[in-house]
Length: 407
Image 1: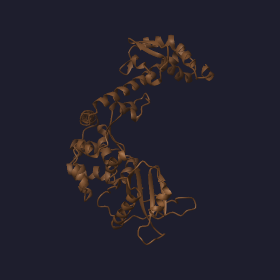
Image 2: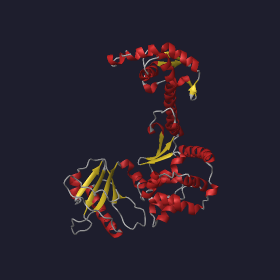
Image 3: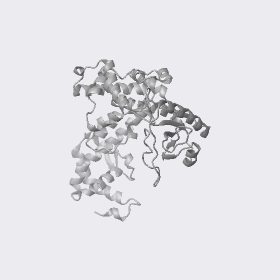
Image 4: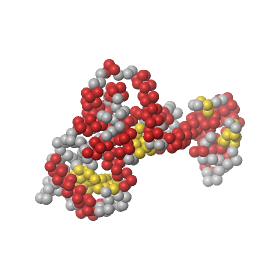
């Protein structure tokens, strides 16, 4: 929260609590005090303080993480740590504590404590360290088809991105196209070509941190150049960059100066898009091999293709249903849903099933050849002759009630 969590009253009728930024000396002293107190309060849990960006002149808060899944009595917790006020959001607790042994009601220090599932403790320690490491890794890897989150690193299938950008308004979720790769910090650093020992030894300055991160093997001059000069120049983007100077300075200042980038060497949009497509495929192949995820990827890709195919068929038959139904457009989704649930395929030919199946088991994709209907005339004829029977079967299903029988 950057030390501003208590700018508003913690409860109605209560005063605000002033939590000014801390000097490095105050920060270091309080960090050691509360590491010890937290370790005593959570005797069987791993406790850590998140590493801050090096060389900061002052600090808004101190961030701690605790590995626990146990419920917490927030009031007892705050009282035990001597807090004058506390706020909680899910597993995150923000406390206003005295900055010195001499009690004062004029100012406090803010400490943030995040309760983390023990299975994600090591990853969270890495992911949330050095201020914006998560954001930096996310921006470096996003265009290559990876998603970096608080749960680990995921490979994002190209088919997922294409489906989300489709004009068909396909209903796809991230879960359908994100392949979990790892939440092991050392394994992820090894894949990216980053020095694990250097990371664990810490950094004395922002430049030291940048120098370590710049060794990421994806940051070749051509890739960095195209990323940098094609960054969105919108007011929203500029506002984000102003708030996250660690990210902005790395991409706008550090990398260009270190790599000697020249705008004249930047590819045109078409060339960059083609190059990025090839580069993304290469990184995908490397990732599934390195993390041993090929079988999982093929299963995920197949399931996503089935979902996209069925939804594409839904979209393409809607105009046919409307033409043959000939009445209110509002009834078309009901009829398409009935066709989806009651139509199966045998030897490539559609037939009405004896029992319906779920939407997820739809077989309408067998009408397709790629992204289009294999034989639009045949599909149109079949729908003309069978849509009414499909709707009648769906309306007769137990539990639908009489309301569904309206014309």
